[in-house]
Length: 167
Image (cartoon, rainbow, N blue to C red; front, side, top):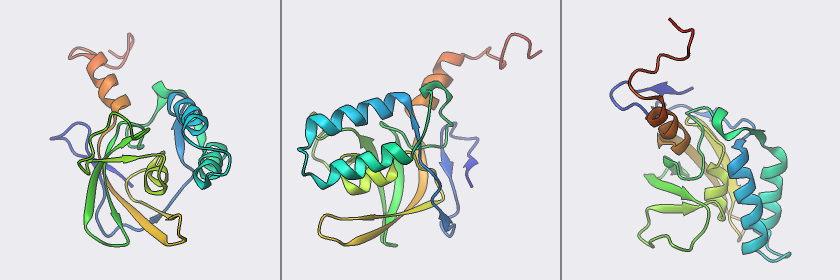
C-alpha cells in the first residue's frame, strides 16, 4: 500500500507498522539494460553478485521505462528503508561505485542491499543475504524521489490535463 502526499508531489509512504510481503520486482527496460551491462563489466564469472543479479533479471516484471508506476524504486531513486528493524536509512540508488561520493548517502544496486531495493515499493519487506551468509530483512519505508515520475511531471507542464480528449 502506498499513499501520495499532496504537499510533496513525488513522496510515497506507508505506515511504519506495515509488513507487506514482497511481490515480483518491476524493472523498466532502461534499468534492466543498465544492470545487465554492469553485471558483465563489474563482476567476474565467480562473483556471487552475478548470479543474484541474473535471478533478479529473470524474476522481474519488465516494462517500458515510460510506463513505470511512480511508486516503484528505480535507479536514481531516493528511498528510506530499515534493515532488521534498526534506524531508517535514506539513500539514493546508484548503478555503480565510480563517480559516487563516499559519504554514505548512496547504495549501489551491485550490493545485496541495493539489489534487494530495486524494483520494489514502499510497504514491501524483502530478505537478502550478505556475502558471509547473514540474512537481512529490509523494510521499505518511503520512496522520496523517482526519476521517471519527476521527468513525467516536468514534461507534463502546468496545462497538461491528461490528454487531448480529456476535457
